[in-house]
Image (cartoon, rainbow, N blue to C red):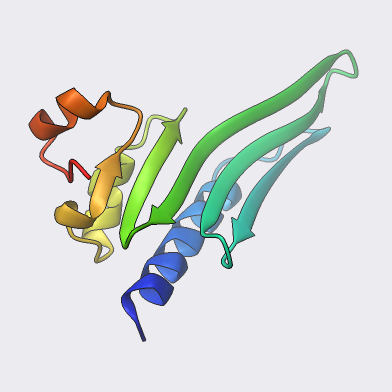
Length: 112
């Protein structure tokens, strides 16, 4: 298995676990959106809460770019970078893209 396919599988498994975690809420749907051709991956929550409030939350957004996993959004309590390292992606291949480029040097992950 090549590196990109391995990373895709790790990301999809990780996001799927997120979607399956916790109790379901009436009217709210958890979705894992995957585009393995363009390497875009998201975990989103969407639906209607109490029939009056529309919910659309991007919980996690990750891409694979230039052989590295870019974490664009993390609206969860998880340490996604560390979780991905535990699953086999080296820190040198993970970019915390939500940090400004000049600050990535201090994250312990890739600066890309």
